Image (cartoon, helix red, strand yellow):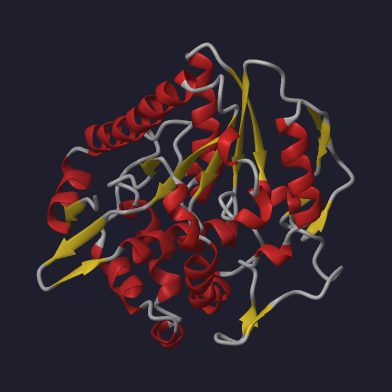
Length: 307
C-alpha cells in the first residue's frame, strides 16, 4: 500500500527535530528488514536462494547487505551476489538501443553476460563452486578480479539486481528461491499536487550516478525515460513473483537529496520537461534542507546515493 506524506509536515520535522525524524525513519526501514529476515530464515531448508528485485535506485545493494546482517542474527550464514557484476564490458558487444527514446538501452538484460549468470545461479543451487566476476562502473569494464563462492548446507545466498526475477536468467530456480521486491512507494503531497514515487526516486539516481558512475545529472535526465521504459518491460512483468515487499523510502531523504540538486536542476529546465520531470525541479525548491551529518547512521541506505 502506497504511503502518503505531507510536505509541510516533512519540512517542519526536518527543521525542528532532525535527530528524531531521522531515527524514526531509519527504524521503520530496519523493522521491515528484520521482519523479512525472520520469515526467510524459517524457510531456509527449502529455499536457500533469495532473489532481490526492484527498480533503479530502490536501494538494492544496501538492503541486500542489511538483509544479510539480519539473517545472520537469525543464526543463518548468508552470502551475496550483485547482478551488476555480470554487466558486459562496454564497447565489447553491440549494445541494445532504445529507439523510442533515442538512447542506448542500459536497462536491457542483453547488457549482461546472461549465459554466465544463469550458469552460476544453477551451479550455486547444486552446491558447486563459482567464480563471481567484478564490474567497475567508473571504467565500464569487467575487471580481472573474481571471488570464489560455494553455497554450503544451511546457507542462503542473496542475489540482487533489476533482472533477478526475469525467467531468462533465473528460470528453473523458482522452487529453490524466495523473492523480495524493493520499492519506493511513497508519495509526498502539497496543496494542489504531489510528488510521485518516481520523482522521489529520480533524486537518488541523479546523485548516485554523478558520484559513483561517471554520469552527470544531465546524463541521468537524458536517460530517465529509457529507465522508466526498462522498468515497464523488464521489471513490472515479473513483480508478481515477489512474496515480500520492502519500501526503502526514508521520509527525511528528500530534504537531503533535492537541496543538493537544486542548483544543477535549475540549469536543465528544458531537459527536465522533455523527460517528464518538471516536478523534480519543483521538488528541489520545495524540500527544506535538513541537518543530517550528526544523525544519519553509517549503514543507512542513503549512503548508497550520497556517499
